Length: 477
Image 1 (spheres, rainbow, N blue to C red):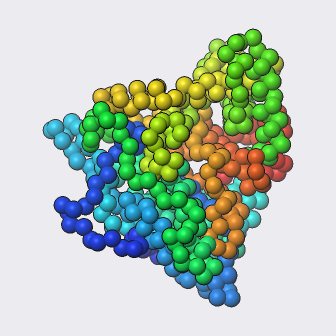
Image 2 (cartoon, rainbow, N blue to C red):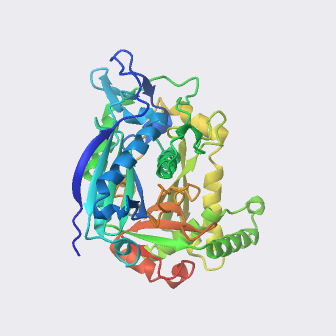
């Protein structure tokens, strides 16, 4: 199989309608919030969808229509950027106070977003979706690979990769300026504009995807811009750039709706059977039940069997809807974090382990509320802390990002719904879990699990874990 991914062209896509060219003194500056700056050193968000091959003027994209396809996608991306115009700008890093402090902001310069056109004629859709091992060349479908958030280049880039019989459309977005909610909001906007234009409609103002709220949300007491300790930030950036030496593999596990319902019912039954009065008022969600199922299996796969050996699950918690004043379509980061911890024996208990693990996850989520988050934001500027997934390597922990609520499989660009979703190599550390909606129908979900090859092999061989997944749909990447 010829598996080379070849770059055909690169271009800069600017927002349309084109705003007036600003002078240096007129350029709009967006100051970043504690939510933004917490993840400023993390690698770009890299997600993309695998699509069927479109027909272009009576031929497939791979039969001479590739340039026409990319031109069409570039045009619709430009219109999407008209709504998300700050992402066509660049970060500005200013060092102050004798190089001890720095400030970081987003300058709306309108310089544009890089769009890469690539081809991989030796890779088919089936090569990605059917075999147990998917070509590692999938990682080559994403631009800005291995780039930390603090850099002078584009904050957003996209890549269109033509396969032998399909197309992969990917975006890489600086995590310091946006979270997963904003990422998929932009992706949904791009795909809807493309879909309407593909059908001959150019009434962009009539799209159903709502416009973003671009104004950043700060506590009244927060300094703007926020001065950051340069040494602490540079240490975190160094860990990201060096990356972990330990090799990892990813596997995508699909949980159909029926399996999710059974796990949720079992977890709630086990929690209700406990003697804790607190547990009596808890309702375990579908996601908490599925993550608890994975947590137990990962403990087994990693050999965390010692009675008091600690295991933890760290995960992102969305703050839209939790913190008053943050709009549902807020464009930026609105994420907090929570950690559930326990001794391995609690998680692996055969009688109530699933319920116990799910209850711990539930309590960790419940700890993120209006009061706690405002207190955290109020203190952050005085003692900044930066997220760094690489710091978890070797601790036996799991990390979770993304959400099954994101509209992934609705990203039809005009010629068919996505066949699959995949991510790039960013933040691929031992223990990372990425959650998606499942393409098999409502109520299901998919987990992309990243572990060492040895642990992942044991996870795939774990009958208890695999019994909840759809047969033959575990995919190693």
